[in-house]
Length: 143
Image (cartoon, rainbow, N blue to C red; front, side):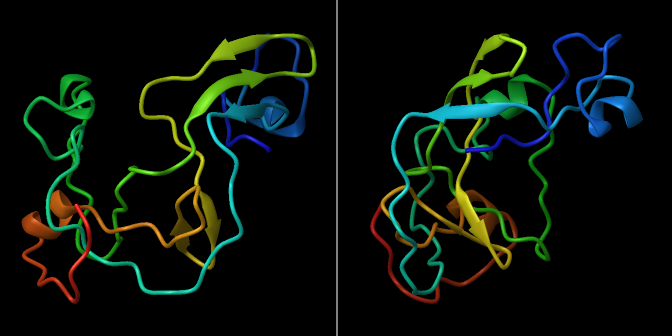
């Protein structure tokens, strides 16, 4: 599985075009190891969760808020709950560098602006995001 952009291990020695153009801040050479395999995606709607998950970004004590991030993702961009998504265990670079995954670093399967959980079911929309944006539940979803 190919990783998203992540800093180059040796910024002064660019390893790819992304590292060259960002002065080492981003690199496309990384591959990731995730905590579970991805099943083929299943069709179906993205339901709105009824309740926030244990570590929802919208909770007062969330990791995102502790980092100083503002979880205001807006109504135009759907924000999906990470529950059930493959999480990054480690990142590997071709030069031999290995970096442990960060908490909250998920690598879900994405296609056509949709996201799926590791079991292949459509990802659910975040309950906190829905509450903040005053969305109505289109259908019931499991907690």
